[in-house]
Image (cartoon, rainbow, N blue to C red; front, side):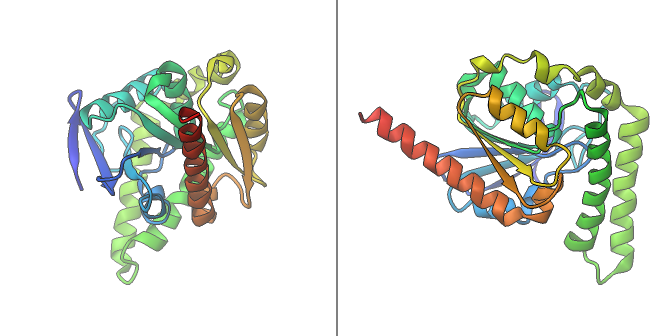
Amino acid sequence: MPIINVNHKQVHIQELNKGAEQTVVLIHGMFSNLSIYYFNIAPILAKHFHVVMYDLKSHGMSERFTDGYDLESMSSDLLALMDVLNLKKVHLAGYSFGGLIALKTALKTPDCVSQLVIIEAPDPQDEKARNIIDEYSKEFLEHYVANFTDTTKVQMGKRQMEKNHRMYEFLFEKTSIKADMIREKHFLSEASFSELNTPTLLLYGSESNCKPTGEWLKTQIFSSELKLIPGDHNVPIQEPVQIAESIVHFLSQSLSKIVTQNHG
């Protein structure tokens, strides 16, 4: 459970296949943690790429903070992490609010992002979408306890659930997270997507309330493709293998195109 110091913040990270030439950084959504990738998606990606996962501030095993949950701060945290790990240019994949962090980072520092994968990023202007994040995060916690803790010992599962609920209470009651998310409600409508030339894969659940956002982003980002996965906002849990294989296919296909173009 590596904990590293990033700008005087304690950040929990996990890495797979460190020796690979290309790096994929995975960003989880609000109110979950890196385990949404660790057990199913990351191992498939790690057959081809160096995979970096990290817990956002106050999530999982990273240090708790009362403020700094706006996209500018979260993007700056990500770039500082990349700097500490000496990662000059990476592929970014973000789920839910993590998808908005990935978009913000690609818009702010395009030279640091080779390719972009946006999974179920919501429109922060849509109040229903903000509620969806909360609703599905609770489902994520229940799924995590049921599948990734020692469920033969009921006490272990109960303890893990209580720990996660304490994280919820801290985030909701002691931090600026909800206010910061609301303050970002115009992010998509004000972003200059015409300047974003990063090849982008948009992965959305075919039954998701966020699907219209994916369809809209497809019209805004020139070099993008939209793929619908069976499921709702929780597709990384519902269809992790399909999500992982879609990412591998997209990144590998795009990389081969870049190599072909560079060699005329």
